[in-house]
Image 1 (cartoon, rainbow, N blue to C red):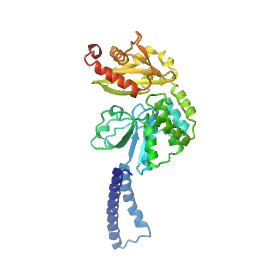
Image 2: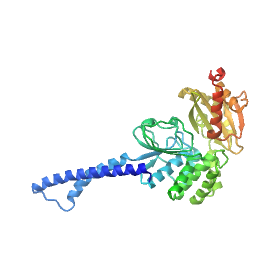
Image 3: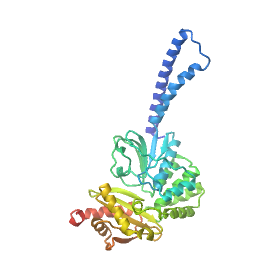
Image 4: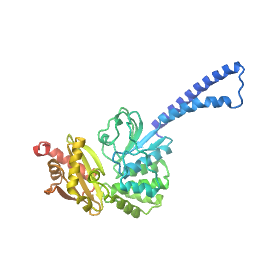
Length: 382
């Protein structure tokens, strides 16, 4: 067990013992006083009286060590699955952990949980200051609950770059250049000798398949492929069939409004001192959402006003043809994308970007480089 965890458990045990003996001693003094007055007790009666305050005190101490595990806001499959898996790992390591979600499930994630027979984690809709938490699939404070800067962070498991989270105390962090948090969690389980049950193995497999778009994304590594094959065997799943079913579920978006579509998979980044919301919509049928182009543009404009953003950028990712269509809602967004990809956005506000699938590895680095190049560009800065 990690030294810090051992130390924390030792301190907790010592505190419980001290409190228990103190309470039992006080109960004994009360019993002695009662006995001196001729009050008789049957076998076990004293222990029942003493148990109540002891158990209450121990329960309060144990609950104070409870770890709430969650991913990012607007959760995707990796954020939900990784939270459940990491809670399983922590409980296996003798911590007390519960998985939560920070938003509604998307169609793909809902399919995965139903197919694997896994319960939907409860919604964490609370200020997390002073809570004991563990975070997966992000370290970006923009994607985390209110009060995270004052929470006690037990640990973070993530596959993204550092994004500005500051804390009062050091904590355990496991950050690796793999395609998903699920990949990292499987590596951790293997190293710790933990054998995941079928449902947990299925969740880790789903994380890899979702974030890698069944290995199409440039974020995919050889380790991700190997882990996916091992996990499919552990879960008793046909890897390709499960991936196909997930893609089919991901494409079920006809019931969503344009305002919901531009927020399906979205994150806020500060790039060159400008606060940008960057959204992607991964689909096997891009023509469906793009047929509502004007409404998608209006939805982005409304979100910029509502959230007081500097800009919003929206990319519709065609999974099967491996390309992204950028949908512009502002002159500054158009200028940024044209600079990033040396392309021309059409008068209607779109441009197809061949080979672009990953926000993390392709979109964000390109936008950051372009924004730096446009630092003194009045047309971009407005």
